[in-house]
Length: 150
Image (cartoon, rainbow, N blue to C red):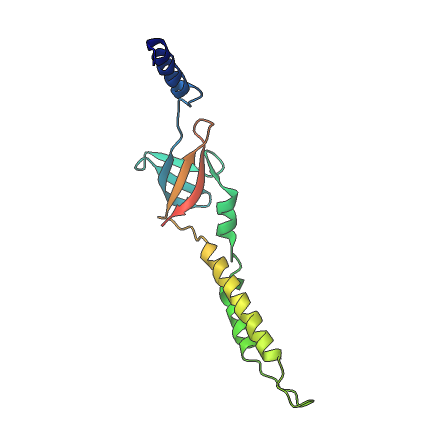
């Protein structure tokens, strides 16, 4: 390879490295929840307090997850209804064959139970002292709470 070609490749590599690179790469920080209403999170070893609606925004995905089972229907009503449904037994003597209804109810109960379990696995229950992931937005001094850190 000629010396001129090597110089051109070197220049091209440097230009590609330097183009369109952001000056300020945003990071994800781990914060600690200190208040729930409004949500307050401290970062940088307690030196900075972020307040919901001011400099802290809650991601829609996180908000939806936290609102799963807000009425407690999934943890109280659904299990009771499932247990009741599984206890149903019925036989018909029309044609001498057993009724298929109990098996259908059991299958539906199992399906509902699996859905209920999956929904509860998604649930987030934010408490004071929990650690959360907070990312910096492009606007200066604005942050987004994205998830709970276990």
